[in-house]
Length: 220
Image 1: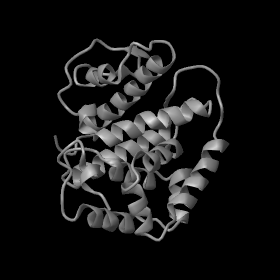
Image 2 (image 1 turned 60 degrees about the vertical axis):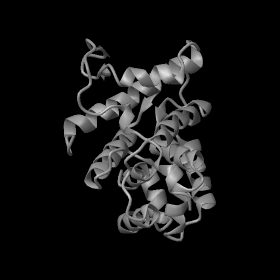
Image 3 (image 1 turned 180 degrees about the vertical axis):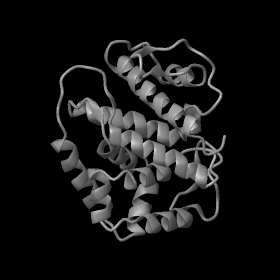
Image 4 (image 1 turned 90 degrees about the vertical axis):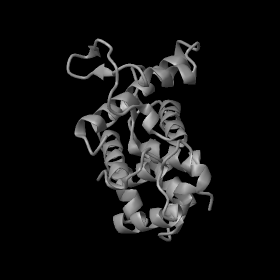
């Protein structure tokens, strides 16, 4: 697959579509199951952002949602639910970081503690950031520009590391490198790019992400 901008942007669009379809499932169309939603991504291309409508469906030959680990898929959906519960239309990096922390009790706390940050304190600051975001009634939920940037950086980082799947630690790195308010929260807590890469190496113990469930193998 390589470090392809096309593959990277395509996966970002697919994540946006799963957010849209999950919104339908939660609000108006309860017959959408999670497995049915995920199957869309193995078969069809997502929304065309230029024309504002869905393009003619075609096979996905690059990356799809199956390139996210199970925990990463759960985190994206949890981030959506956090945004919706706060009446916020955009899924921001703060929502995603909060979801990462809540989705798995080992990975993100490990990365924070290795850099002498306190997970509970970071989570509380992220909560305040979420509360400060604009509230909007109605409309479809979507990824903010910063969230898209974080996702793109996470995908590229995974590819650079030789990993086959995008996992929670890749998302964490992507948020750190996104350069927005949530990124500053992490940096203010003492989180650095170098420290995060080293913490990921310590977490992995030399292993690569070659399955959908690496987080289960990285118990700390």
